[in-house]
Length: 365
Image 1: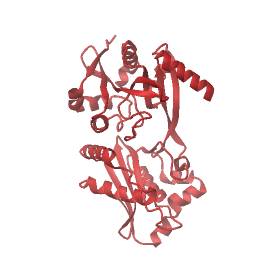
Image 2: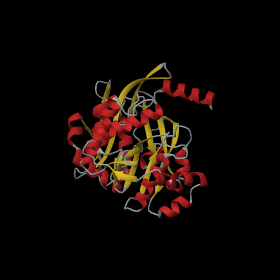
Image 3: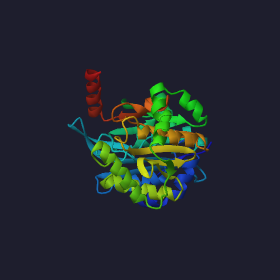
Image 4: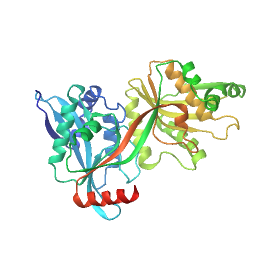
């Protein structure tokens, strides 16, 4: 039986482990974008600096010293219910109910598929042996992951209060099938906005759907911010959020994974998307479009139609809308019935905090 040992990586290890990290990620079932070294290390570098947090990056090695697991966590002090100060251990990628950063979805422990159960149990056993945390928050955790399933089924942190604080759906379209079958399955009004109104769009001028060059990443983000501000009144990415996305985009461009696409009419850009393509999986991170372009047209919907059609005609097998709602309607639910369940799971072991949350949940249930 393979022996699993747990070690700590420090900041220097984190900065230099790119090749080993991503090689393990390729042998896991964890998300290839959000759990990549590029995303995780950049998030830590941008959002954790100058904050009162400490890196708690645990790794697992087998008897041959091969990396078989990564638990990317950090520790912070926070006030629960504005009263209790707790020592919170949580995933790198989010400040749960804290400062707004760039949301990281589909979080998980990264484990080698051949040893996943054993590695996950070793991580929880190690966490249980530590006495410097009061609550563990596993935010945006996939409910079908071994990290979630084993914790709940085997009660791997005994004596703790497991609290499903929030649950979400992360939406996607399976693009292995034909685009024709996809649009046939849509509701009448959604099909009109996504596809049928192309005829009207084409009457307005020469239509182009293009993947942009990634040579000038800053300009693409400026264009996205401009369109977003027209619609929402503010830039979608600014300050640290802009710094983070530009940095990740440059790293992912080196892997040929960055995709900015535009929909234009007679040379005028009416919609832009900020996407990534990794392992035949397309992620839509953000979109911006001219809401008042035409009273009968929804450029954002039409752009989704071109993107999904392009994915269906390529080797891509998934177009991912991710979690979140629209400005006026839950449009993602209209575009697909496929989703992944994710959860913000609080694991509370401090007796006082545990009692406070039990009482809170009882009276608000």
